[in-house]
Length: 242
Image (tube, rainbow, N blue to C red; front, side, top):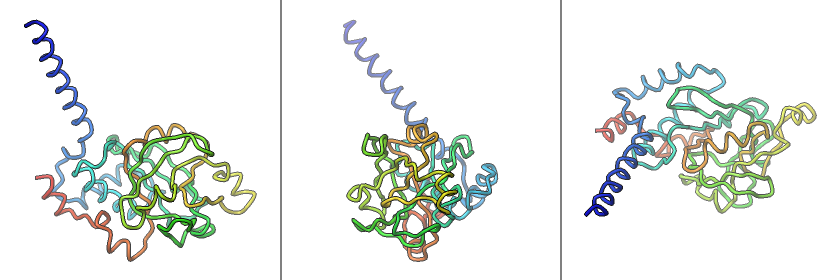
């Protein structure tokens, strides 16, 4: 009887632990949002960083809300936004701590060599295109490859669902640096991967790995009109939170 009691107690404690873990990853659902636009504006104002484009941020937030409400984001404390509408020579990688409402890391980030020079203009989901792909991604596992520590990405949309097949990952690269820009007039380019500077790279990867959301933004008309995630509405949000 004693052993049975201990066994039941352990199961109860495990259940409580699992509930706590789930609750720690559902803080967004507890926010009373009647107007998504108003909430997004207030959150953007609180973040208070003009380097982060408002349209890129709100589009990313729409997809985040939908996926998080469906339980598709395992690590929902962070949202990463890459704004490919900006010059490659400027900060366009933003790691946002949604729980504390602030950007905790921003940096330059490379695009694919066939996407453009200083500015990315062309995007593709095709294997061998050496172009970047826009849209929403879920971060996955890390591994050690030819670039050292790397983070796999899984594309969640029609425009990036070949990410695994194309080996589109986050990795650090020497060509993503201010020195490279000074010597070449622009940032270096990748084979389609969103490559990051070597400085603070490990810290960033370990924060966003294993199931956080990453969004690569570009104001492409077809994508903005046809992406289910980018068009998630406040009405849908309120209905799903009921």
